[in-house]
Length: 276
Ligand SMILES: NC(=O)c1ccc[n+]([C@@H]2O[C@H](COP(=O)([O-])OP(=O)(O)OC[C@H]3O[C@@H](n4cnc5c(N)ncnc54)[C@H](O)[C@@H]3O)[C@@H](O)[C@H]2O)c1
Image (cartoon, rainbow, N blue to C red; front, side, top):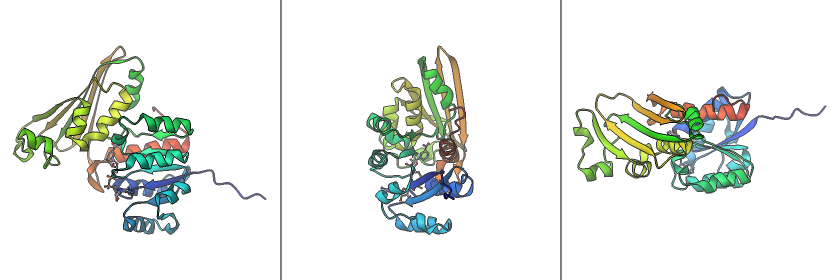
């Protein structure tokens, strides 16, 4: 009798930090029906060893990105690297699909989208810390008239921000609701690189980057990082809001962003896409 073929999607993860580790644990614990973890890699080898040991899967520890890419069908990118784009390019060039967590790196990256298309593989982008991308993408088909992203955050996390320093704003001295920024996505990305993933995800979904007005409001009263997206057009009006708690493993990351990465992977591996 022929041995049964394992048809589950083989997943490799680059970046064994907060997001990569959590995705690794979910694959081995909850997603085993549709996929299996075949490789993990990080520039910090200690992280690779710790994670593979905690999962009791020593064989998944890879010593190079090339070895990692070879081991999988789909690469989960969860790195904080300067060369993220070239990591994604290397995987797509090898005809591997990529779930990209660092969506901010995909602004002005039409070359990567074209490469994915040419090589018949997928570039998967999670919705991250915002809601309603399904409706926003649908609305973009007929055109969006106005669109704004308002981010509300506590002052913590804005210390040492060069843009605020230049403006003479000391976040620790903010005592009431204060608008610290209003401008375009391009300006927001420059001034607040930590907010780049949300702005980039909205830009790519709405296909209306010139129109998006970004506001950042800070107040010590805020206990969550919240994002309100509002748009109008011939479809009507959409308003969405998320109040995000931080990821238990990393206070810099919204928990919903990690969960959205997991859900995107689950849909891709199971082949069932709901509301995407
Ligand atoms: N899409 C979203 O809404 C969203 C939300 C939160 C975070 N993110 C992004 O996800 C990425 C990962 O976030 P995190 O919280 O897990 O970060 P983290 O700092 O916890 O982990 C990043 C890991 O990448 C590793 N790394 C850095 N350069 C590398 C390289 N060249 N090759 C291999 N590994 C490398 C680091 O050693 C580290 O272990 C970040 O780029 C972050 O901006 C996206």
